[in-house]
Image 1 (cartoon, one colour):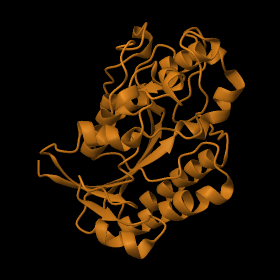
Image 2 (cartoon, helix red, strand yellow; image 1 turned 30 degrees about the vertical axis):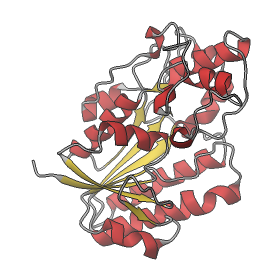
Image 3 (tube, helix red, strand yellow; image 1 turned 90 degrees about the vertical axis):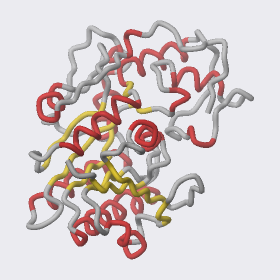
Length: 300
């Protein structure tokens, strides 16, 4: 199979780090990175997705676009999400259509279904709960961020059904992908232990800015964070694998999939992605009983 040319927007967050670690560099793909900031270690098309004219040249001669760029703070106010998440997503779809990019892989979010968690936590984090949300379950976003992701999914459906490109749109509802230093089910809890100390990992390990607070290892807050992430974790390698499944798929016109590892307590469906895309997650948060290298500082 010929090498695919793939544009990635917003490749320097946590989901982007997963792709940079596990996909970028593969001989099967030629990646172009688009970000609003320059990154000297990578060849980057510097532009803000809210500026159509600035991003349009990056779409030329691309086979696919992985659209990760967004204001990803789950607690963001409306005025903070309009430009990046509404205008930016429309610009990406318009540029893909104009340039003839056939495939769009859209980073949606578990926050599209956020009220289900809000209404059922913390019991939802236990293995014996009976809630399983699939691609046909009614979205219930828990804030403006989640609502913009519902908008993006629906806009993708509109564009995929129109004449011309894009002819494929994959809506990927991403659960909890974490930076490499915290890519395990204890990641959020350990981040809280390190936050505000000399052990905190900064820079490339940016994470969901809506997650705040600090606590001691073994505290009630710590254990609840562990329980949640054991259920909602998406390992970096599972996420990158799901994206690769989308890149290789030639049959989907429009569909929705959950990016989540095969966690025993997960409340998001993986069978649809397995059946349609051949997704084969390798990780299960319930198999962990302690954080890795608990006596060591995580390395960035």
